[in-house]
Amino acid sequence: MRILIVTDLWHPTVNGTVRVIGQVNRQLEAMGHQVVVIGPRRFQTIPFPGDPEVIVALHPEKTIGPMMLAARPDAIHLWTAGPVGVAARNILGGRNIPFTSAYLTKSPEYMQARFGIPMEKTFATLRPFHQVSRCVMVPSDGIIGELKARGFGNNLKLWWAGTDTDLFRPREKSFLDLPRPIHLYVGRVTIEKNLEAFLKLDLPGSKLVVGDGPERARLQQQFPKAHFAGVKQGEELAKYYAAADVFVFPSRTDTLGLTMMESLAAGVPVAAFPVTGPNEVIADSGAGVLDEDLGKAIEAARGIDPAHCRAYAMRFSWAQSTRDFLANLVPLKSSVATQERPGDAPDLLD
Image (cartoon, rainbow, N blue to C red; front, side):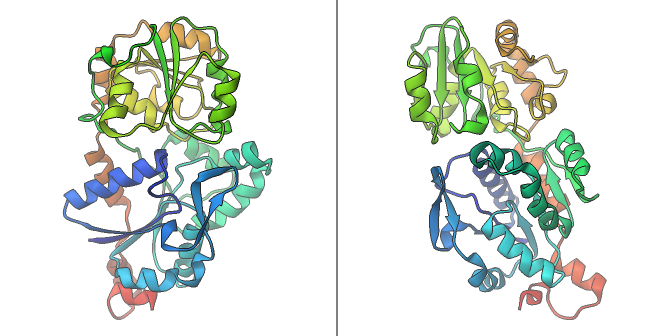
């Protein structure tokens, strides 16, 4: 198939959503499909307020229609509900053209944490966005329950992201020359990630933060004993994971937590709060510890066998995740046949 991907988050931004999309795209292409991406840099952009590493498209509705038509897609998936996603959704929904969508981030919680916007206001914009989607891919049963309680429909379907178990694997611990045990966090350094809950703890050894974001300068000043390594990717990132002793996931607002799965693949146990995301990834696997007292969770996690973490992570693969993604897509041609509308499906975008 020729698959059109629409997203407000794309390279060079570095975050979990971009990594998920990139992995799925690579798997799709390896399976013989063609992938066309319409991302924010196809339009004029401005920095996202308070987080200049993220860019926002300006008025994509003016030109996205011809871009979608030129893609000649067999299926369309909208990863995000930002300006680019909304512009695409309005065209597709207005013409009854089938598409699928995803709910990967807790945008209402983020908007409230960053800007004080009441969550219900953001939910009020997300409900109609996803209402006309043929399938909303959601990364956990917990989030599905939360969305249904917020008035979302019955088009929600569980879809798990995968883990690159070839890249993220156990390696030499000597890569990091820091006092042990090494407690690692990987991810965006933003207010909603709740990093202070980790950094303020009195822990033996070292605290290490890998990633960047608008909160980094403030947290470095407030917690001078913590080590901030900045953004790492690929092999270097994998070495950081594997060299740690415990992976600390302090966020209370993630839908799943790709970094937890990568850490487990590297043989490093997880310590987190018992909230949506960790509840789904760790559950009763024994590969991590969940506790409202994060310090207790970290202490207990240090005793987990790394081999057990690795074995548990091997259940998840990007190949299977992408096969599930494909199964959820709605081909335009089959939709046209069902509706008895003439012509090739992509012509519906004319």
